[in-house]
Image (tube, rainbow, N blue to C red; front, side, top):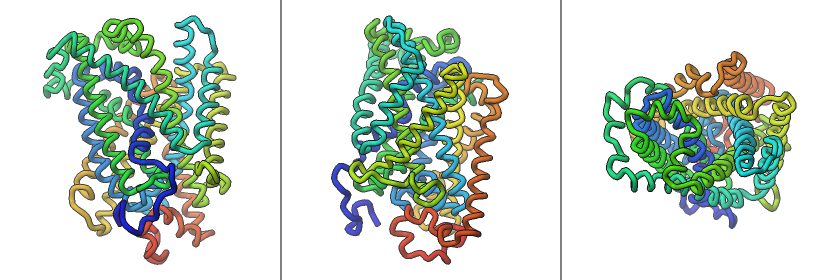
Length: 492
């Protein structure tokens, strides 16, 4: 059934359109935060001037992922995210494992961003003569996140749209200033020459490039709140990947032109997180540099809110299927939001942040690096699993063109699997700490996945009817004609 087919019931007014979903997922990727936080590390420890090619490669790989993922989102009604996609292609037990890993990963990413928000807001305020502790800065951000998360999702989308315009606008101004000063030399061809693009440090560059896209796949969580899910969710995903890839690649490329192909590795290694602020002060003046500081804080808030919204919808999906307490499945009668799941997620974030604060740990070096690193790794691993699930559909005889159902997801799986391996192998660099405790965090992901498999096995044995209903609500029209006996352990 097509997205606009006659059998699809009209959506209630005020639901999400393609533009709303696009804003939600691009905000989750936090373009300004990614540029300021990860690109200098990719320059310094990765391929240097070849970093733009790494971002282009990541964008093309994730576009292939989006082609395959669109097959899944259309089949699942554009709702349920990785949980529904894996259920459709690989069966119920892997889907439960994926659902729990997604819940852990999005919560960890949200908590890590809350720490970063508190840390950088404190620094920006201090630079302007205002002394406020990071704890109070983080608390203010969490209260605002909780308030917006409780309300209808369109309100969050409108707020995120305004914040996104600011962060993209200041980077666009910096890009234009580089072009104006350096002309054609701002776009050095050397960045895409083979010996530079695949030179020393290419693995590290690819790792940072892939993790900078985190959040774009969350479009498949908003199908229940979209006007025409089967059309708007794939469109928003495609648009997000293309826009983010072009923007990241162009900004990285221009930065290489501004600093110089020969010196970018050394300069980035010296400046690190200050690289873009130094460029902004030089190219767009002190006012532009100050604006970049403020907009970094709003970018972190936008990403926190967007990932909070995604985590709350995973909680609702799992609660609807009896994999979490049923109270989390409740929908607000007026706002039609998963308000109880949102409140629970806000409480969890507040508790973890408070524990780190009470222990006297750093909000950035300890909280952000560990939680965001683990969440990022989990989401990339789930992207690879989702690509594999589309291949699973093909192997089980699902019809469809060879490109979206076979070649594109296969290429995406190869690229994403390499990214997972690179992230695990360089987890100390991804998190910025050599701590053995933090180095062991990736083990939580297979442990949680194993817990999901055990939960599915127990439900199959003790509650067969509930087990056979897992994920069926997300398979839309396809499942209405399917009986549980048909599905077996495969899918609904």
